[in-house]
Length: 165
Figure 1 (cartoon, rainbow, N blue to C red):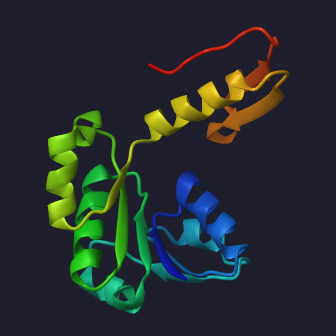
Figure 2: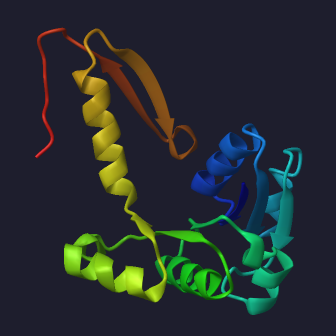
């Protein structure tokens, strides 16, 4: 599968590492050369530039992409690049968003009409993962976030159950 990841920050780098281990054809786009240098040891191609540029998207061969994932720090860039990628031929597009309002059913349909197949709202994903972890009986785990600035240590009591609302 040919996958293009726009954004080589924490999320994009993590995705690129996971996907490159699964023998996918991966292209990572980022404006910062330093971010791309951090992943050049992986089996993937990098393109320096903004994913909202027609030239950069064409260089990444977006017309042949099975999946375009926009996870830059800019919600606007993610939305714009996903729309452009779909119009240029990407089969499926995903955009990371920061505005929970976009997830309302009518709004999701609006984005679908624009060419964005899925919206990712990181806070919802994090909450879902934490609830799943806590509901696992006997869980003991440790997570680092933001390069070690925040740590989460989980020790689960077997009778403690949390449900998501």
